[in-house]
Image (cartoon, rainbow, N blue to C red; front, side, top):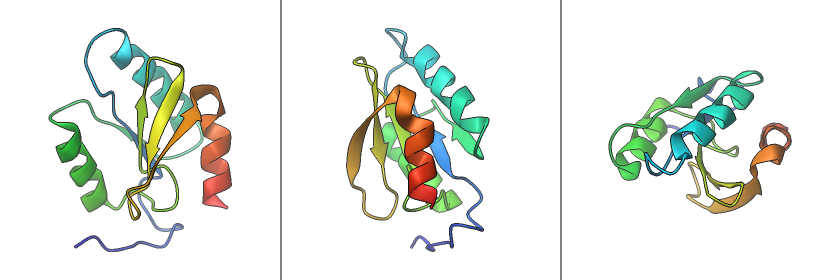
Length: 105
């Protein structure tokens, strides 16, 4: 069972996962990761299945109510998954830092 950490003490604010290791996806994911980590404690993971990566971050206590996982897509958006609700939302990659800031308020 995942402990719902208070936002102020959650060790990670977001994690970035490229869904596939081809078609420029890892490079795009790295750029997004580099952008986010300038502002927030962020983790990058490209190993194993997406489900296992989600579970590792859930166990690590990646911040709820903010993007717990961010997966870039080919159309310049990212899929953001909330840890607690599992709800997914598409956000323009160039607006992600602002999106995270709003979720952390």
